[in-house]
Length: 490
Image 1 (tube, rainbow, N blue to C red):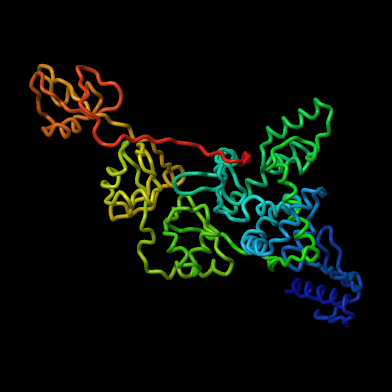
Image 2 (image 1 turned 90 degrees about the vertical axis):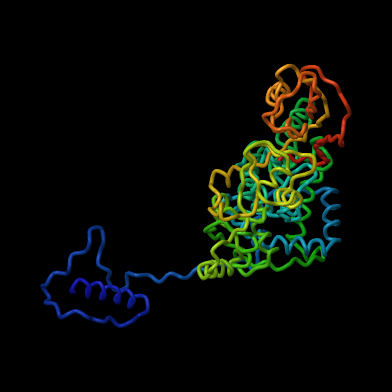
């Protein structure tokens, strides 16, 4: 108790030294020759007047997120006719800027936070304006996807998962992390932010070759001096134009939407498989708002083993948790994953899972004239036989693999002595059940010597054959990769 009283006295003494309070003695009187309580090792008793009063430092926090971005500008400015042209172009489209700004309000705070933690220029937060108009669902003609426009291969190299159930190139947090990782790497490679941005758009290999060409010719190797495609030539001027407008909107007669300098969303654990509509309802937000924050979940169901958390507006995260805990709904997912046991037609697969072919194609985005390959993961209605949540192996790695339907020709072959459905099927690489169906016989039937046996086959048929007629429509799939004019290597 005496130790506690001593501590209290020391604290009050310190306060007295700061505020000129009279000393309050809470201990019994001490004899003049009585020793003081020894101090702890390395410490000295606090005496009156030893504690100094320090002034409180006032922090001038940015009024809004735009001001915070302005304060972090560190990238060298580019000043040329292309910049002037793009600045004029954007400033003449106030409605377009307003729509982009409002769309960005969900994501900008997170991007700025990530940039500041890495000590990167904050004007890079404006790059999605150029890439996708801040639309995380954007897909280019070259198949670049998401807010930061990653190409499939580059996305994989930066650990952006792309499978049958999600595409992390669209994920707000994952794609931002990958984009900043890539930009950091490019800056270390070229030592110049303008060249790093050119490489982000055109590919580091192409920029490296352009620099080498100029070096061999004895020419400068800055961004403005390199020979590059027009899209890349305009890339940094577009970003500089946005930087100019955000930096001083009144000069360009532009009104930016108000974006508060605080987080818009927070991450919430996903406790179980759940339909997207159910998750939005539990969070009490619109389906469009939910998809805007969770664009990587491009299917109607969220698989907890593959998407362990979701993003929700800050105030709705607690609402979601409260409604989930209070919900009496036994099943929150009406869809699940089904693995195709063999390569089959879409109609066969649809029949196996109890769906119409049209609905099965629609929910799994299967184009015409394609077959489902064995091992493919597909969405099907959840039943009592498939009530468990999807496993991590399927949710994290499931892929839909398709192959063109084979063009089948109607052939006839002459049966030999002792030929059966099974022997003819084996000889011609088809299934006995198919031979039986085509010839309206039992699967264990035998054929008479010389009997005409109907087959539908692709490729060369062995044995004595006769092409009767090609019945039905021929199908052929021309698979074209439309590379468009986009040079992005992301």
